[in-house]
Length: 386
Image (tube, rainbow, N blue to C red; front, top):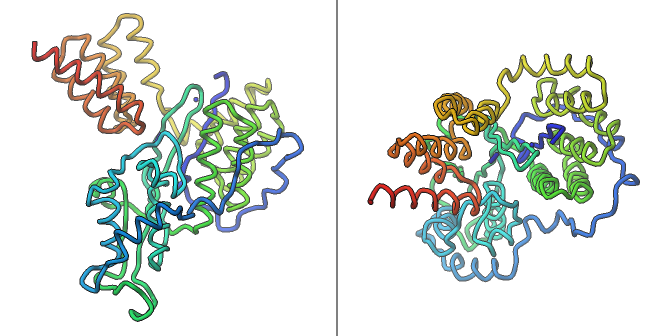
């Protein structure tokens, strides 16, 4: 999952710990300063079942007998039988019905769609934040940091006579869209459905920012905080929106709100450093930057950007060394693997180039990057066959 003159960091999914007693955010909202949005923002549509989804459930799930465990029947129908041919695609955050129609989604969208079907079947659903290391990506000048969520299906509390489904098997079944090996030893914490909706809204806000639609992003972030007032990634996104719109005092207030409750937030510290520098408050900016350096000595993409400069200067050896350092910070970052593949190819190290292009393809998160990396890999393989 995965930044201009100001470094802007938005938090997608929001897998960081929540404070025990969130402060109210009403004073951080400034509707009168923001242009209205023409987009429909309806929290009720996030989990809504479309007629096509209901029809699929009726065809694929209503025939379940007491011989099948309903939760496994659901997962088989959605993911294991090949009927939906779902793809992982982090290009946009989709509602349940959008993920179903597109047959694609990021982990949040797939969790939402699965939960919608489970609720339709009468299965209890709980959501979890998986406490993995943050994953960084960037779109232009916007840096994105994402966490990870999954869901747990428990056995129906209803008597068998009141349900089409008879529950057997384990009391809890975790459904996750990361490989099991990536989750070994990971800790989780339960999160409310309202937080899931807040995550959805915050993702939409980040996507609007990436497209240059800061005013629209405000209304998405506002709805995220309406759904969960303690959702700090939404406050950080609000700060980025204000900064993009030139509302620096409002942006600073939002960032300081985050830091009161989460003093080690790298997103808020990074954004505040750049904000103070932009406002000409250089001494304050340096002080915040020193705090940030204690928490995050090496910023994401530091070595990657240095490697690009080295490669542009014709120093492929230095670029290779710098990218290896970046991979120690971000071992699954597809952009880094892709550039390292290009470096190896220029150095005539075709086998290593093929390996890293393959890893770029494996770790890519959007259809566009998958198509690009796949095409480069095919071209490289064709050269090896000549």
